[in-house]
Amino acid sequence: MKYEKKYVKILSIILLVLISYIYILPCISYGATVTQEVKTGIENFPKTYQDKLIKLKELHPNWNFEAYYTGIEWNELIQNETGEVLHKRSVVPSYYSNLWKCDTCGNDKGWTCASKEIVEYFIDPRNFLNEVNIFQFEELSFNKNIHTLQGVQISVKNTFLDNNVTYYDDEQNKNITRTYADIIIEVAEKTNISPFHIKSKIIQEVGSNGSASVSGTYPGYENYYNFFNYGAHDTGDPIANGLSFAKEKGWNTPYKAILGGAELIGNSYVNQGQNTSYFFKFDVVGDRILKAGESDTVSKTLFFSHQYMTNIMDPYSQSSSVYNTYAQNGNLDATLNFIIPVYNNMETEYHKKPTKYTEADGELYYTNVIKTAGTRDNPTYGSKIVYNLEKDEVVVMLNRKCILSDGVYWDIVMLENGWNVYVESSYMESCKITSSTEQEQEIEIDENNNLITTPTVEINNIIEELKIDNYQLLDSTGMIVTKENEKVATGYKLNLLKDDNKTIEKTYILIKIGDVNGDGKVSASDYVFIKNYIMESQSLTGIWEKAANVNYDDKISAGDYVRIKNYIMEGQAINLN
Image 1 (cartoon, rainbow, N blue to C red):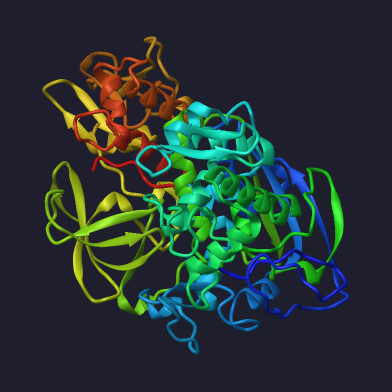
Image 2: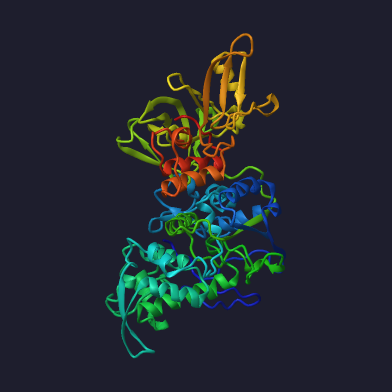
């Protein structure tokens, strides 16, 4: 973690109340103002946001989305988050691709200044409107309906926070023993901050095993704790700097340190309007929380300098942790609010990760996963993973769907380092935008059991495959489907007719991959069917079980509903692979 120096925003004076380490950051356009406003509802977002938000709403009807119109020009935003205004305001790990790094900055303790192109990628909210990464925009306020002690207990499993801690309680005048989960939920209520955010922030700062900052045994700072690394600037010894700050604050118990750190987050960030993880990193709001329907005139001097961290990937990284917490607790369908920024004059095309490849190098594909996809030296799951492709990483396609192995198709792709590797075909998406009708269709005909399994919605595709002229389509109730309403749906029957157009020669039962409820569509309701089956609250047998086997591995598992989510959210074709 890299730490940016933290201080409280002030409108008209240069004196800054420091949290950790003082220096003056350049601001822009003194005296200039913008109008900021918050609008609720998907219809109030720009068109380039709406499609993905609509799909998220299908998956989670209780989720609410607020558009935070920042009033900031896109070009001005990028200038102020790159070295054009201040080097190392946004940084990336030094071992990453040179395309991620600016041309002038060197390695500083494993970090270097981020390039304009990678800043554009991580700061563009539209790149992260999927079920996982949306959590960087989650409102961080406490919600008693979904934030419970049991939920926190689950979330801290396999971390040092899943333990008891004994400390002297000033009010009771005695030593008491409590769990960290108990402390976190109490602190969350007191500070009006999500306990999952508090937990994630602690793990982000000191690691899942803890660090010397929270041991209480660091030489010279025995019995002092700093769970959020406040004051741990890089000059000298970061741990000693942070514990010196803790000593000044009187954080001589874990409870005081967690409460004190959370209060600073609340007072210095959440209650200053920076009430999402995205806003912690990118300071693009005023100095108070705007509610839906409110607007405010904001001085530009308030922007860009008050940022919790410099790591450009931090909001993206945190989103996975928060999502996993909600998933483990069964709270993904709770009523959650997401505040998503909008900038003036954003380009229509999303800003993708920088790549050295161009169309002259061959057919370009990107990784259509939410986090990573492993590439292997052989086309089997048992072979060695040689490289993990990250979300939206670009490769050159050498051989598409060249091998069927372990029940899936594999591609051969060329990485930026020149390696040729295998990757599961379903993880790769062409950089060329294609309509759903242009996507590959694969139809499987089981003559022994009279079944036709297909990802297509068009009956004509099946007719062409069978090379027949006369047929009759029946819905799941046995009623004849008229030509105008023909579609492929699980449970429908296709009668092949003889030349008299009356006599039935053969009957097939249709199975549309992903259509688990038989309505002919692949939607959130199918996702719920599979999820309920896995949780043993729903049965699926026969053709319905086959329809749910989206990844074609002869079993119903999390991989199937993940693929349905990818189809809904990312437009990934559902093929038999």
